[in-house]
Length: 231
Length: 231
DNA sequence: AGCGAAATAATAGTAATACTATCACAAACT
DNA sequence: AGTTTGTGATAGTATTACTATTATTTCGCT
Image (cartoon, rainbow over all chains, first blue to last red; front, side, top):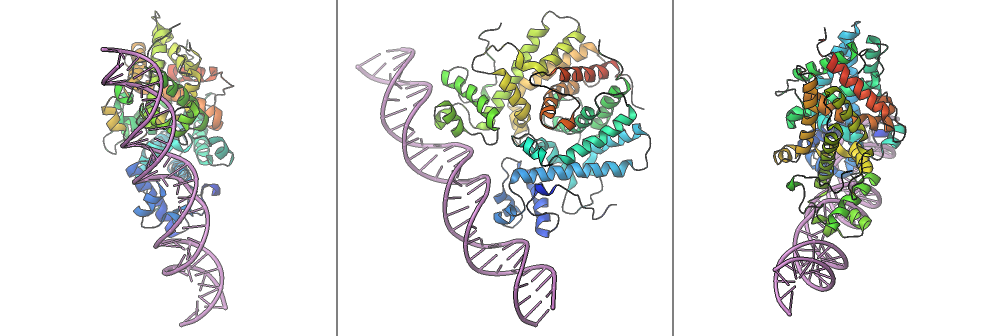
């Protein structure tokens, strides 16, 4: 059990480091709860302040605006998943087993070791599934990318891609498959819950086993048969 | 060349049918241009009215709010791609060739037959890539789904899934693969343009051939080797 | 225990946003 | 010619996205 780990994030994401102070930690905690509850568009710093019994001005001292707060939460999640993958694949040599553990971690990030009191990983996972991609689908993506705000996603993707390369060095799309496994995990949980005709997997409550099976099927079909060229 | 086709969409998407009037068509045209230019979050009906030389109140007579307008545009796109797939696969029997045509259509929807003067399909495609998923990542998704606002996506997904089923009747994930091909096409064009380390494909300008090759590789690897179970 | 610095709370204010309402006018239909 | 319908013009309101100022509390240090 990893108690007291600190997730290290790009300093440009925040004005004052929220992990350093009690108020900052309350901002993280309550923003996760409130965005999950009402959705990102209706969410604002006034509502957050009321929810956490503080003031709007105080929240603005930590984050420039709600977009930066979302980017912070998403980065936190990317880094958290990276940490979980390291932790769960430690001492495992076989890249096939490692990839299976990775896939399971992507689907079940929420159920792991809640190590940090001010972040409810289960709710954060739900939030990432619903709102995560809004963090990089903006007009400012290139500028923010230059400032390193997506480093955590890139590192996570690279970590997965390394295992794929180890498994199949000649596979031409390791990064594509890596990011797609992450996106697919989130997408198909969402589809199963809200637009079930867009998927074949069924999730009941917190049981994402069918998502894991499906991701494994996709990943290993592609990797084991990548030599088969279409036509 | 299909001149004057009319895209049929759920009536709940709009207050007044924008395809029916000159003003409505100008709303569609200018909203595509303006959202593409400034992004969806900063976009609003006041700016649209100025851009198209009309008034805010007039725009509000056509759409309840900007979310519904986005949903309309996205639905239009889904329907447009469905139409293109029908058109392009007409008289083609071989399901493998059909799937290849579908994949190419997903990546190159923009370059096809611009049949409707008030919709710039190329710009709309770019808009869908950047903003498309915001149409269903909202708290109102279940309610809107019940009202049939995502029917066009479901129909498109089902159309692709049918071809997959024909090709491999025993494949357990036809809808998953179908929606994933659509999402992947958009995602990896976006990644190639903005976050290239999350993909392996390269796009230069309007040349999405590498995306097509990648999607074919994924689709046919999975379908040709779906019997290979991991472990 | 007492002082200064820093963080937070309280309050207020501004510009922009997301609408709604009203009325006037023009075209189009009857 | 009169009525309906669509659009434009204008105005107004509540909420949002901030910024600024001052008061109060907490914290670190001697």
